[in-house]
Amino acid sequence: SYVLTQPPSVSVAPGKTARITCGGNNIGSKSVHWYQQKPGQAPVLVIYYDSDRPSGIPERFSGSNSGNTATLTISRVEAGDEADYYCQVWDSSSDRVVFGGGTKLTVL
Amino acid sequence: QVQLQESGPGLVKPSGTLSLTCAVSGGSISSSNWWSWVRQPPGKGLEWIGEIYHSGSTNYNPSLKSRVTISVDKSKNQFSLKLSSVTAADTAVYYCAREPPNSHVMDVWGKGTTVTVSS
View (cartoon, helix red, strand yellow):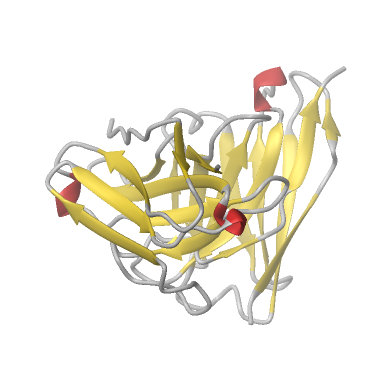
């Protein structure tokens, strides 16, 4: 079965750039979606189809996907960006949604 | 805009069946979207349970497939989840979500409902 691997945690100072990776076998051939989840809240879609942003999501959030790694980049990080972030793909070989294990972003 | 609301018992006995409903408002469940269930055990990550189209077509997580049934009720504009033979490992927050056509991306989520499996 297809596996997505994320680092458990990433730390960044306010105003700096955070990069959260999502690794998977030839993930560049799949569409990757990213969700932000704050404590006690439902996930929120922040990036879809690798690099598209839903309306209402700041331009500071961007995404890329190539080879075996997809990356969520958050520029000019703010305290309010502190959350868990999950990547997700559709595995067409088994017809199922796959989530990464999640990355806790800490703003120092 | 579309809103989703989960409902159902917050406590289920071991070996019993967990039953939840997701009410869709602000849009029709018969639109060209798929509708998903996702769960999150305490302190853990997201786990996809399965999805359904209004025609009744479904896809399930292979790890849960033998215990899961997702169904749709177009007359009530809602879809449902049944998970049988539950154990403490099924204790989680359960979310329903919308997937726009041909996307398998979840753009609208319910607030989630907590289900505890305990005697």
